[in-house]
Image (cartoon, rainbow, N blue to C red; front, side, top):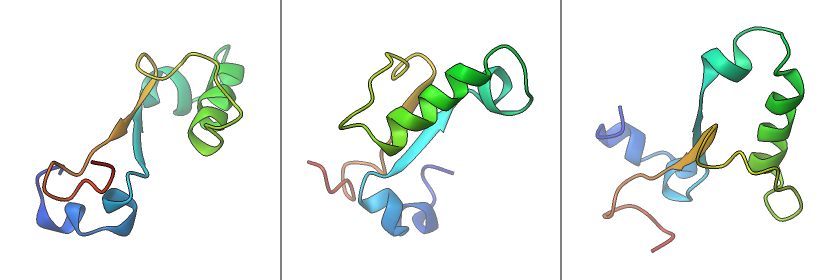
Length: 72
């Protein structure tokens, strides 16, 4: 998927606004990690004000690749 031209053409991908998280651990079903799931979404949606320390372990930002990554 990450190598598909249609993926790289998406505005969210070009702008560095795509993310991957562990769905089985956090998002697919309710359970004791419900609060952590909310924290992850808060970090992704409001990075300027929320830092619970989940980036890198529970979620990460996806890059379109060097030729389309607008953050470089």
